[in-house]
Image (cartoon, rainbow, N blue to C red; front, side, top):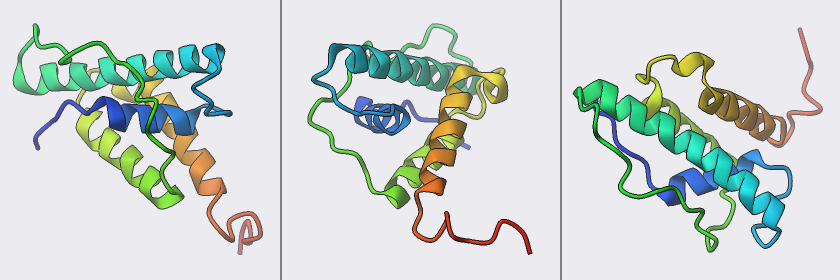
Length: 124
């Protein structure tokens, strides 16, 4: 399986879905998005380094949120999260990493917003 370093657009979209209020004009929210995006980027690059045995490989540039990106739809968001998991799962310690926690929490949030989810039976 190949591993790619994901774009700032991809990471920004995930970070925006992760935060409660995705308003990048608020400095506190922007800092939070930067921190989440940086964590996601570092783990993604670690997977790339591990997969290709390139310990000195780095991201093309430091993570910078893309302020012009809009939030994706629920399905698009879930697909972005799946892509991140596939591109990053080879990072050592990924399953217990902060990045994996961000992905899990964001996925859970998006799933709970799917139409019909809140009214579906909990068990059969």
